Length: 92
Image 1 (cartoon, rainbow, N blue to C red):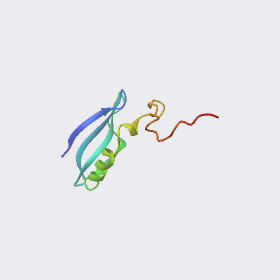
Image 2 (image 1 turned 180 degrees about the vertical axis):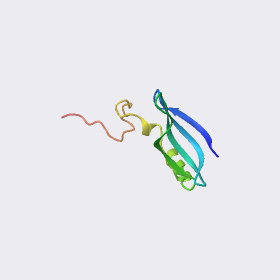
Image 3 (image 1 turned 135 degrees about the horizontal axis):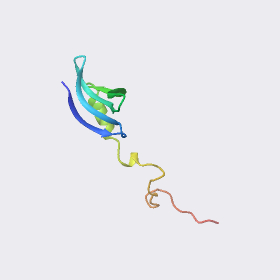
Image 4 (image 1 turned 30 degrees about the vertical axis):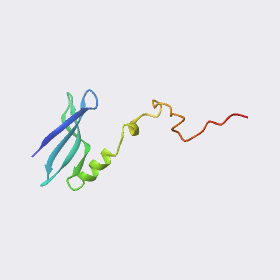
């Protein structure tokens, strides 16, 4: 039994596919790259499989990531001085 959950575009020829599947008689979550090109169309070896036993821990870890965690340092907004916990000291 395979159930596609969704896919994300990685680039012009590659998607990241997320699906629930049954491998070796055990259900799990598979996250793999799928390529569409002139030479090859199908799944690559790149990916990961999360067993059903580890799914709750995996979901907990993913849900612990915030949008702030994913901000690029160079594009981050400057910290508000009041919230930084640091005071501006006068130059002497």
